[in-house]
Image (cartoon, protein in one colour):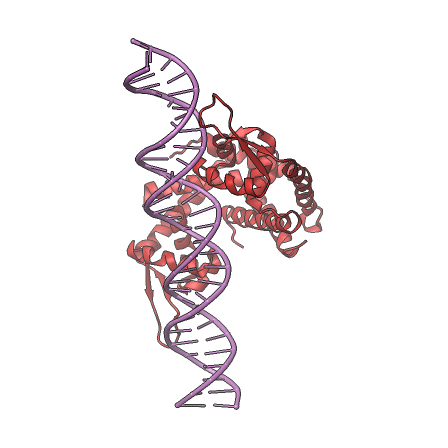
Length: 146
Length: 146
DNA sequence: GTGGTCATGTCAACTGGTTGACACGTGAAC
DNA sequence: GTTCACGTGTCAACCAGTTGACATGACCAC
């Protein structure tokens, strides 16, 4: 394990993602990245491809390619409204809403459990979260410099 | 910005990586992921494809495909020793060693600068690093459960 | 109406990963 | 010697992103 915090961050994220993916596949039959898409969609529904892409931090093309498989798997429905150009409106199915309502809190709880481990004494997740958010904000303010 | 720490982590990493990549491209003519490979190699040199892959957290096939471009760019040399089967030995060129020696500390310093921002009062990077490392360790011990 | 301009979605080509199969050298067993 | 197992690297096929070009539909100006 490196002493550089950027490496530690990557390692932590990799662990978290791998665990979440494993749980989601085993218990809910959905991949990690699919779940993220559904969870974001649940917060933003109904929305379109462009907005979802923005929320997920990927391009519209990437979302455009993923939508068919989500529809086929029964998580998402698409429709288009007259008078809105090519806009594709995305909505969750009832199944997907249920999934998000169940799996989301389960993952949250599981992560919160981490800090009940004796080794994690003195770690306050909300303080940690705030510090990480502050660093993110500072980096963003500095712009793509310098 | 979400209240979920996993999201915050992804956002922070994305910012950090983008900044590092930008600096490395502009100042040193190397991409972020290339630099990571060189930096790891500098710590591990001389080594082979399998070991480098392990250190980078990717498969041997991925490294095998990236090596030719590193050689062509003049960062890496390859050779093979008699009596070592197909083993490909990787070493940095002098240029690459110089690059790592210069760019590495620059990036470190730039990141350390973050916490001198007034908003970051009370953030101690080494404490933060240790906390993140603890969480990583706990996740790894729990295995791929549960 | 006709012709820009804009937002939106999709396509083709590319990149950098993955997996699973396989080729290659080495060394040990027989 | 031949065979077998093993460590190592590479290949083909696939996957999920990206970019840049382009099609489509709506709207505005004229």
